[in-house]
Every structure is written in C-alpha cells, then in structure tokens.
Length: 282
Image 1 (cartoon, rainbow, N blue to C red):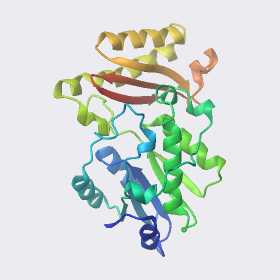
Image 2 (tube, helix red, strand yellow; image 1 turned 45 degrees about the vertical axis):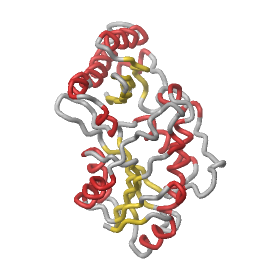
Image 3 (cartoon, rainbow, N blue to C red; image 1 turned 90 degrees about the vertical axis):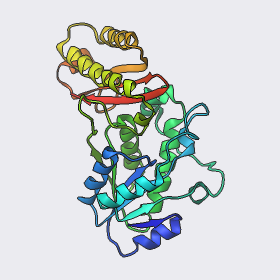
C-alpha cells in the first residue's frame, strides 16, 4: 500500500492507474470501514482510502481533539483489506490557508435531523468531501466513491451534491455493519464502557419497533415517535430524534405513504457521553 500526504503526491500516484474507487474516512477504522474498502475494490482499477479528521464538521463543544486517532492499526487494516493508496493529508495539506470558501447544501435536506442538532455539520462535510473528490478525481476523469448507509442523511446530501454539480463520480452505498444484537459499528463505540455497549443495543431495537408500529398504523406517527423517545429516555438515554421519513427526500410521510412507500427510521441519541446514530430502511 502506497501512503501519500499531499494532493500532488496523490495525483502522481494515481497517474496511469485507471479509474479510482475511493473510500473517505476519519480513521479509527472498524469492520464497517473495511467492508467499504472491499466493496470499492469491486468497482475500480485502483482502490484509494483517505484518513483525515475534518475540523470543519465538528462543533466547538464536540470531540475533535479527543477523536480517536489509531494510525498504525488503521494502516495495517487497510493494507490487509487490499487498499492500494492511502491518502493521509495533514491539515496544512488539505487546508493550506483558511477555508473561507465553503459549500452550503440545500437546507431542505441538510437543516433537519443531524443538521438541526449539529448546525453547520453538513457544510463541513460537503466542503471536505468536495475537496477530497477534487484531489482524487480531478486528473482521472472521474470514478467511484463509497459511503456507508449508517450515515444515512450524509449519504443523501453527498449524492445530491454530486448530482447537482454534475461530478463524474458514481456514489455507491455500503450496508451498515453490525455486531450481534444489532448495534451499528461506529468509531465512537470505542467511547462506550462494557456496560454501555450492552445498553447501546437499545437504539437499533427502538428503531425496529418504531418501523413496525409505523407500518401497522396503530397510532398517528407523531404519537409513535413520542412514545419511542419516552421509552428510550426511560432506559437512560438522551435522544435527539427517533423518526420515520420517506427514503426519497427524508420528508415526513403522509398516511398513505406509511402504508406502502419506501421509508427509513432514523435515530440519534446520547448514551452517557457518547452520541450514536442509526437507521433502518423498511
């Protein structure tokens, strides 16, 4: 595996290598990330992963400084997964000057759910992803980028960004990797104690119950969501949202859509000091 740090080094390494398949990460890798790398290998001539903890997508009170950085383990795992090139820019490589030009996504999609509880988050995400795409694809004529479904709204925002800017990039969605019991793999799971890891299963269980109840039409959706929030609070969680939305645009479904439209249940909640997100398509 070839490790590069600057955009110029990356473009040199990609020269004459064909169509890249790219997996952007913030490191602290787990099996979910590696499944994305393996998926990328099926869709490109050269597999590229990046590790960059992006300051722009962290709010002032969030965990940028303490976010786990596990460089040695990450490199070993990526090499074992078949990654060809690791792009690991330093902050000065990706942001050599203050990033005053930023990409603001459509508020209709980005200001709800995660964007509501983490204002500015998707601006930071879109800005860094567009810059990473430029680094990887500008001289290759396009390629493939792979993102996980666990960050469901993020995936949709990036898909819309690629569509609206007519970028020559195909976005491929990887399924969420889970441990036995249903907990979605996340880099932030490492913050959880052994007892909290057991308790963390409750988030995916709450989403399954909400999805089943929403399809059954036993109560108005707003009442079902309130009930789900109350039940999670009773277990010691501090939820931001548990909700059912249309998959196509993340808008609130009509009564008719609840019966037959493709839907997704999404949740974000804090267990102790750790904020977890998850979703379930149905």
